[in-house]
Image 1 (cartoon, rainbow, N blue to C red):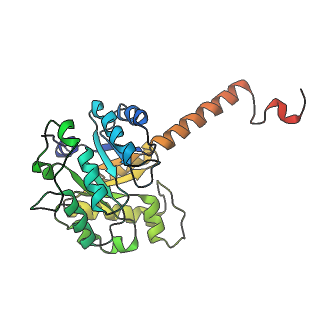
Image 2: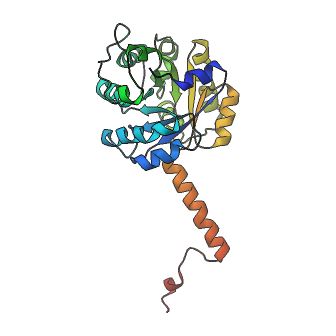
Image 3: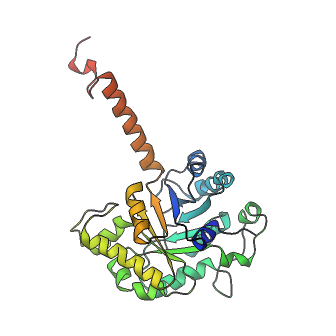
Length: 269
């Protein structure tokens, strides 16, 4: 039976760094998983992928020893259970607005008598050398607080039995609470957003839950760890690829003294 390495790290008082996958490609997943992350999450909700990509991505990550997780598209039992059966050790569920919704989500994560998960760990049984109802104690259930309703019901959500943590996506949290006053983005600097983010973290710890934050840069992620967050996600495959490519192209143009316009753009040969 497998054990969840994140739980061991937290028991030792260590924070967790999580990677993020939005590109539906097993090779990309394999590369990201080999870079030293503690966990890597496949974004089924907004990523350019579907379940036919998810399974080989989990398989590609196996050799690295990272904890594989998934953000599902919605609070829907089919995709939650199927992701767990594929080998996910943690599920991040978006748009949890009430304690009842949190309890429903948790029920899809746990086998009876603690939930209503159906037994059929097709890949997980092979990937982990066996799989039993003891998985109830190892898989992680993270609810996302992204709306004013979710914020208003934070106490009852975080009091949900079986919920392991709250995952904050700052972009949707901003959209869901600021009525269009602020543009969606990571690494918020507005005092009201920082206060909100830190309040969520504080309530999580008061109720024995882990707090996780999606960040755009390592500096902000480290700052969040200093606030008391237990897990931070730093960018993701698509953003890292774009950033590295942009930096490489900019360096080439600077070193060769060539600006953005090509010589032929002026019309001469």
